Image 1 (cartoon, one colour):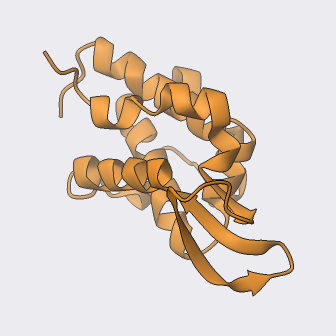
Image 2: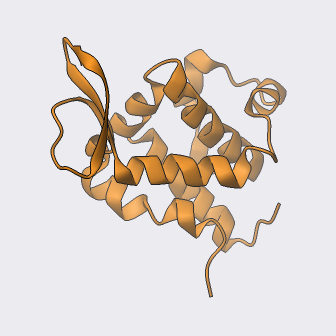
Amino acid sequence: MKKRYEEITKHIPGLEDHGSLYMYYGVPHSEDCLVYSDENEDGHLIMSDECDELCIAIAEEFQYKFKWYDVFDDNKITLETIFDVDVEVQDFDVITAILLYLVDSLMLEDRFIDALNNGFLLRVLKRLEYWSMAGESV
């Protein structure tokens, strides 16, 4: 039997192993990636196929169920302090809002890359896995 949110949480081992290679600026490390933009001072924007799959899974699961900005507003979360949120104690709505914000931020800024590099995304996915095992349903 497939666990709820498995298409998202199955990325936890990959993030633990090589999260910094999910998305980064530089030179591709394999052929299993998407290369965006002209080369800048840090190289090309590289998105692994795993990262693309993760972002699509997050969007497909939650984009029509939640408005991240409303959840942030209700919980007094600001974009400037997103990485200060203690995700290990957050409820399901906050976790999904953070995931949606990080995916949305791909278009505007490098918050997703920052979340990969500082381990924040991994912590959020582990909390989603907790809610999945706790039987959270939406």
